[in-house]
Image (cartoon, rainbow, N blue to C red):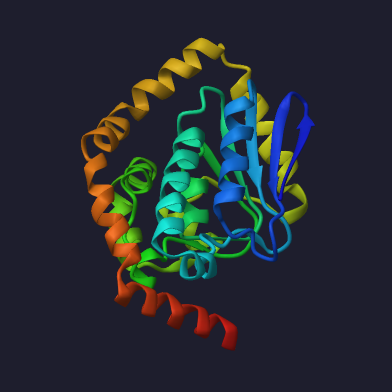
Length: 242
């Protein structure tokens, strides 16, 4: 599900969960625990052709409202654990990073990409953004956030670089070594100064998350609505036909 490897005092967390690294409560809890426990720089990557294709929508349908509520809480907890990790975080995007997988990458300090497509597909499926996810996206993308969120497109790596969704492109064989090298380079900064700089940079996003936490009741209602479930079913059926 999630493997951990130490490389040059950098913790590499690799998502190995099914064919596409789909995010479910179990994986999210494992990610949160691993990031929270790390006292060093962290690189997050995936396996195969995917970094993470986003939330496991089949489990959303099968689990109903109670599972959806648990999932949304777990998503926000994981995104914030990565976003607010006091040490450097680097996403090594080895393949498709869609919806929640894209948010996970955007929560990192730096993002490298070697292949696949990346994008925020939530509105294409018809599900609203949890407050924490949207504010992390806004922090990472700045004035491009609206274009990426409302466009709901999965972009190739060149377009992702142009939009600021990733910071650097690499070849597949060089992705992880480059990500580890960058994480180690950032980790060479004085740790307390680095931590404080992140706190200061993230303060507007975290203040907005705290101020609008009540919006997540409406987010849950949107995810659990009958018409949303129908759109999810249609999206899964379209994927099955590919």
